[in-house]
Length: 248
Image (cartoon, rainbow, N blue to C red; front, side, top):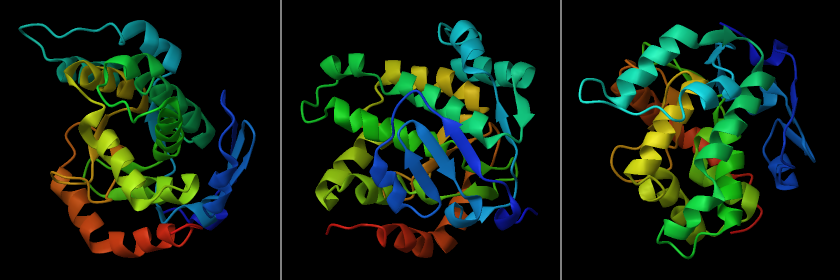
């Protein structure tokens, strides 16, 4: 088991300047394009500081155009690609940079025109993209145990705290993240893109958004295990994130 207080500071330069209000979240320091995390202050639980990744440029070349066939689903193609190409890394900065590219691709403005949700703006996509970047550091093991979890797991509470959203606005963004964005075409994009992070995006909720967020989970992990752990622990963790809000 790794003690987060002894793990070195994580620092990365990203293509986008992050909102300075991320500094409200303990352990996060944002200075323009530079994002720095203090693991001891940021993570609620941090027992494994390795992640599976595939370079985004490789995924963009090999997977973004992948199509399923009558004999093989896209999920099968994604799993085989991960098995053949993913490598473990202890460099959390690489994970953040990869996560940023994944969510920059998934939440791109070109989709707004056919979304059918005129209340969603490019600013909302920025929130989704930035929160997703931090969520890339969450980790669930093949056993279903949550090994790494930080505030960004709890997407609704975190985006409300950072972006000064009302409860209603936060719920709207949460609905978008949990399903409103993902018609079948965009769901398939999600499967392809998340091979870069070594798995698939799984929401912590069962059927409707309930502030349990989600994580990139390896194919084959028992989903009931991490949801049971969330059920036991989430109230205290969510309360810690809610305490970062400066508006009611």
